[in-house]
Length: 133
Image (tube, rainbow, N blue to C red; front, side, top):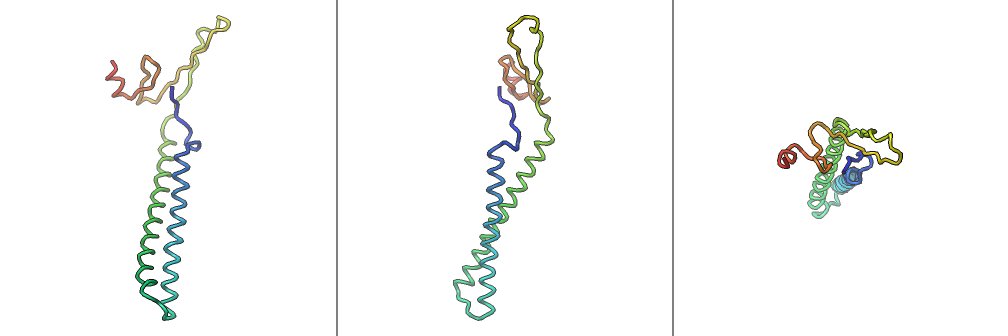
């Protein structure tokens, strides 16, 4: 039986946040440093074609990476908001065998309304539940 994990304990979620923050930092550094170099060399008159034309391409690349990092942070925020709004599964303990000593307790998970528990105890989506009938 698979239970949903808490989002704060999800490694892919934290990898998304860490990667997005790294992309934001790296993109910002790349864009700002090349724009700063272009501005400085153009003002003092020592600018070469490499600093001006290649600097523009590097600044655009840095802006694209910065934008991708911001999109990743928006996705992480959306995932956390969606997870906060989804209903959590509750565990109900069947205590009908409490009168017998040593009897095993059976735990049943009540899933969200969009899912059903099949005969094997596996949570199935509505399409899978209809197909198994």
